[in-house]
Image 1 (cartoon, one colour):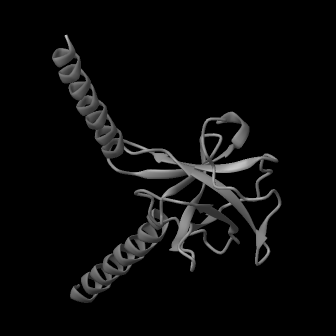
Image 2 (spheres, rainbow, N blue to C red):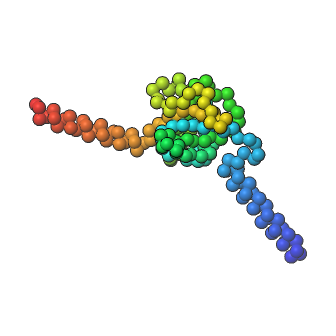
Image 3 (tube, one colour):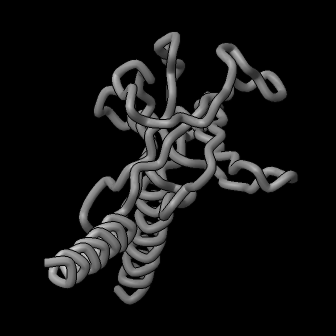
Length: 169
């Protein structure tokens, strides 16, 4: 009788470990042997983007940020994306970094540059490749702390103008 219980307890422990390891790999976004499609992105600032952040195309998650490093000359940051599938990218493709939620999560979204004419995407020539990997230019939207700092500066400038207007009249 105790032998049956020992086998049952051992089986439950092994099953729990298998579920734990499998769940961890699933949550981490492991692609289970499928080849990832690499894309590199150049930009001047990554803000709060981090490895593991979502990569989206037309609102659908298609990959993850694999790595972030500063270029040797210090002029740009290179972000490596790993897409889970081959995509037909727009001819003027760029990447837009923006907050994904109010809780500090950031995302990289592959977009047509022509949809955002006011954004200053990092200049990358069309069909540029680095070690056979396509390279796209990107733009980072300002985060809330930068917008708050800009609003504070505008408020300060308005206060100065009001004081000068009061002195003048």
